[in-house]
Image (cartoon, rainbow, N blue to C red; front, side):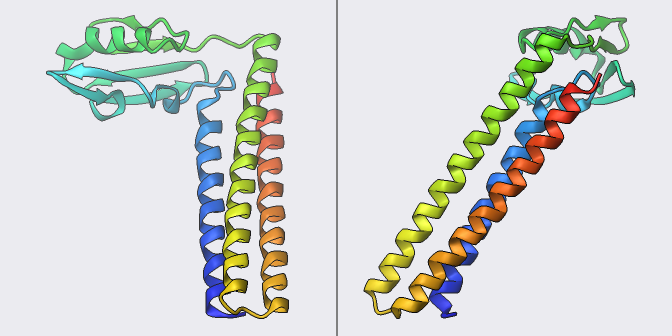
Length: 187
């Protein structure tokens, strides 16, 4: 394999790995009814004029599978944090006891589970589209190398390698989706 061919493969591999990482992050945001500090990951609040992520201004713990406890570093921010959590529209209603916020994570219904599975399938399909775009771009690079003098059999092998790489990552996406679907449907 030529240096140029290897570069095309390495570039495609890195892009596909980034797609998988992004999908895993998206899957973490789809909650399965179990309390997790990740559920509050996108919550930001006004901390003395600066929009600050909640997890940078408080300890967030999950003492059990149905409870999230937010303990702010600055107790004066407790009510601001409470409003930010409610404004984030996560379906949570935090209880403020003056020291910490307690958030009961409600169990999810069967219909909600099905909706979450649909959402997970949609995220997986978006990741597959991203892989196909990466494959197309790599194949275009291969065709350009062929125009620039890469032997035809080498170009064909490169395209075959790109397809094998794409198939490998599509399989990873399907495995991640299967695991997430099982997690979401488990009662």
